[in-house]
Image 1 (cartoon, rainbow, N blue to C red):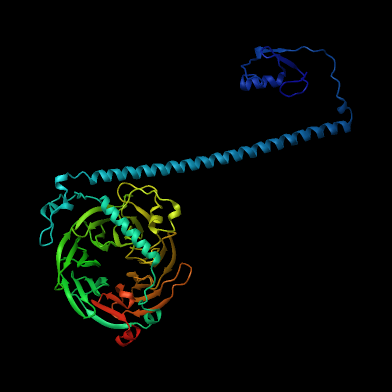
Image 2: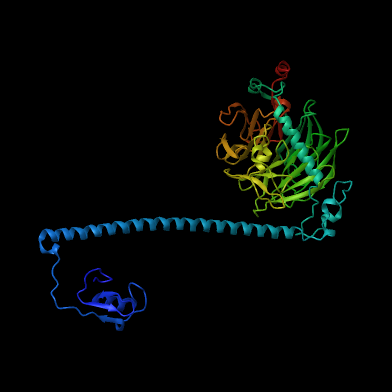
Length: 553
């Protein structure tokens, strides 16, 4: 009989009264002293439960293998082989255990990451909810600012101005009819874009290469020089400029006459915008206000509304494609959506993530359903203007770039949320321009100009035309989407190509102001001329000389 522990014939055999198992006495004594239980059954066991087994005193004969040296060598070989096989089995088990442990650790790490992300989203949702609750704690009688009557001098009624310093104004929001109007406009413009062709009257590359300065017009006051904003009304060939002197100027380019000088702002005019239909004109200022002007038959403009919904400098004004609505963006970190006819702020939007950066630029996409904004902390944010919930199929992406951008976010709060964020710039994003083709976006910041493909939400080209001390101030696509202009220490015109092709600089105009800073640039109708504003208060027109222009036409 063999020992239940060693498997060998015991020299001093003992047996357990509980289990009846046979053991070598010295081995079972050591095991009981260490563990106090049976090594086979695991039951409690003491030396009192061990009974010695008496055997005869016959001398144990040697096994046959141990009777000779070759036999002993064979026995040792068998023992060694058994040991090696046992070690191999242990190594396999160790390898399997390591793999299982590694897999378990990866699962644990992934679970921790998911938990951390869910906690972050929960905290963001709580923060957003608390902000929303604070937004709507203003009582109804004191928060009807959006519906306050407008006085004849362009100021809002007293209710709008007498709110407590920390109070936020109530806004009516966008009704279903407004959302339907925005959607219908988007659908119509998207269809037109598919069929659009480059107009035959567009200035060819050869003509743009031959452009030179054809006129210069000193606007604004000499003690506060500088034009910092510019816009063109194509239907009447009117040019508007906003100056550091707090005034805006309406200029009739064909006649070379100033039609009107608009005064009323107390600080520099940071943004000017014509409304394509009607006689309306918009100005945004560092005095935190936006003024809505109405033109008259004699060419003068009267202030119709003064909008005071922002609490910091207004940096940008942009008009929706319907010409019935417009958006203002401010350093207070909000943008406002207004109805043009009444001057009512329908909604004031802040970033639901709780970030406090201000907006330095803004522009509507040509189809009108998305809005691009540039921030003080180098971000470009793309917003959906009308909806909060999206349920579109992926197969429609190639047909509508707006839906593609909307699908990038699957969860929106009931306040507006940005559907895409572009980073990579250095410094505030000072200018933003959408191409008429619907899928190119150009942005300018301290580090240069970046071009983005909205179909893939990817930066595909960078321009660094100036040194690090001279950032670009303005970037602008022409109305056909054929040319791109950059203004900084000079003015550069690029021919628009596709994503993979090179965008060639076809013309560079030197800065003739002597200030080394062209602040704004716009293409005229069909790119027949280029208007540039500079810090020396001069509006410069670049184009073909009159005789060359006549030959081109």
